[in-house]
Image (cartoon, rainbow, N blue to C red):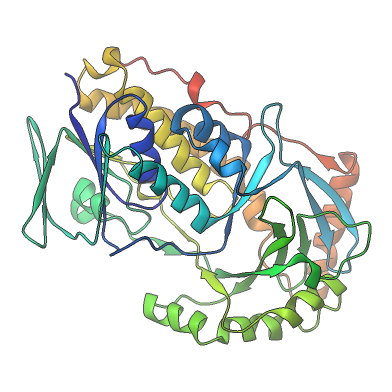
Length: 410
């Protein structure tokens, strides 16, 4: 059952990653994106060693990314007053973590796709009106009257996935807002004051929320920052207005006005109201299945995680593992239904483990405005870091190697 063409819906991160991995094995794909052109929410993104391993060995863009981002081995954790709790390792034996602008990551992958016109087609501005899943292939019909046909369809269209609705029908759940948004931006590192012995990247756990300062260029001269803000949910238009109007930046400044630590104060004093980006994390409940017929979901379309630094990594792992299955003649001969079943079984196990292990990272983002609650959190974190020698190293997530995962299909 040789594969002639794979249809991929979603031109964000997971879709192009899958297309590139397939192209390396001489399998053609077409990527369809509803946005009219290359546009993706700005801000920076952290890529842990497990993500970089997939991007290197299977997807093939690691070297390009490394030359465009900031590599780092650890993350410094501080209290609101600047006290150093300790450091959290961000590297393993093969890779240091990498921080890079999201737009740079996205454009790098799309550039790589465009360099392989014989194997990857990317179409922007297409809206799907119908999915026809037949015994011998899948046909997509678009609003402009055109159509596309392939052997299988992969839904990589994010947390608000339309392909998920096709797979699950009326039972498809809706994403749930997690109650806080991330307000982020970029500044020259020279504009952010810090004690001379501080290392970056650094995170400050405050009574208001989390403040993070990352470096995102190779030279380490440009800083990406974000602060968390607890808010009720809004519709998409209201969120856009909240950011574009400058109110998000002004609210962040008001919320953190009580925090006098010099790094936070200098950061807030230099933020331009109209130069921030909003990220509104949502989560998805477990869905009963990720596939139906010749259609399968990957990335956030299948399993959106709470914010723990591993969301994009899971998308890259998905793309890498699925590409290994689809390029294995031994696996594909059993039929796509069994290939997708194997994919889902393996990846569900991994996602569930990452969700459990990463719970603490997401929980730390919230604020604790009551003074006694914050002091309790500060005491607990101080004790935890002290117990562990002020250096936390846990490779249960980052040491994962997608190239070593079993691709045997029964």
